[in-house]
Image (cartoon, rainbow, N blue to C red; front, side, top):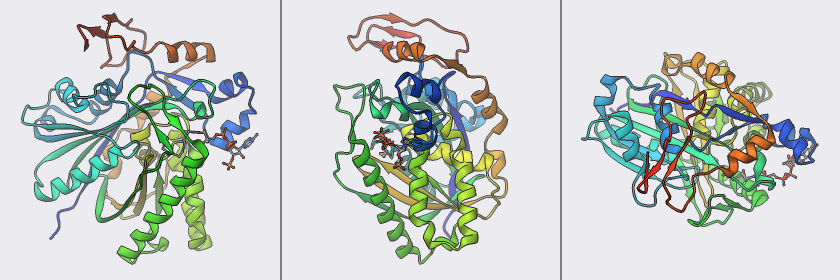
Length: 385
Ligand code: CAA
């Protein structure tokens, strides 16, 4: 019999500052409803220089790992497109910060926003062979576009940490998935740039085309139809994107099911609407949002669409487990989001510009109020502290 494998626990972290989208719209001379409704974002996380993908991942993972669990982690798979080094994996820094055993295998995975899904699927395959092991999968990113560009409203950042195990508490992954790769220039970030380059409207078309392709192929492989699903969860670069994805397949559902799927989508976009794009972590923040805010039941089948520009798409599914609500701390997440500080557009622009310089100089960063447990203190002798 195949071993049941999937997500056992989910942790989430986003920094303490956010920008209100009405403030941004006003500053950019746009109608606020373009951002609130047209794009579907209310707030976006503002990432201070004292947080990078390693520290954000550590802050997320810290919520789900006990001392005993740490000893059992056989592998750390770190999905990111905002890495801090072209050679050394963020996973190695993370394993050290968390005090994981040196017998852990630690690597970084990159394919735009798809990296965490690659990690999840590789972890699942590994666990089917090594069912007593545990794998830590990370999706951590800083979504950064140019100031005053159309992409600016779709920024954000944070980290998702998932403990992936056999007999998982939250979501048991089904073995069939459908994936698709094409060399497409819709969004990319050459090594000499800190902001992404993007053909924005084209990227939204490619996203929808890829969704159609993998959804169709998944149905062909499994003989399932939309009637077999209780909810769909999407990669959400901005919430309107997932809404468009869902709209594409809704006509396949009965009117009663359409209402149920729409209701589930509303729950799945709530947290993303207040954080913005997490790139690799966005799909999993949306999953967490659905589980926190939706009316889901054990045994429900969820469909997940992962998309990474460049481009890779994957559709897969999972079955919600009886004690899924014990796999995350919803109150802590509410607290994390509620206690954030609203920054003005002027402050946001100053924080945006205050990135760690790329000239290798020694830097000591100020430790501010609301500092997280793990933070970047600066750089000395070319090494991040
Ligand atoms: N009230 C309500 N709605 C309004 C409005 C108003 N006053 N004014 C405009 N709108 C609507 C528009 O009608 C439009 O809706 P539809 O898409 O449903 O037609 C929506 O607001 C957006 O308007 P525009 O298309 O004019 O917006 P834009 O061209 O300024 O930028 C964008 C939109 C292309 C998505 C841009 O934000 C962008 O480039 N973002 C980054 C790229 C991105 O996120 N792509 C997603 C797919 S790629 C991916 O998923 C990977 C990843 O994470 C990056």
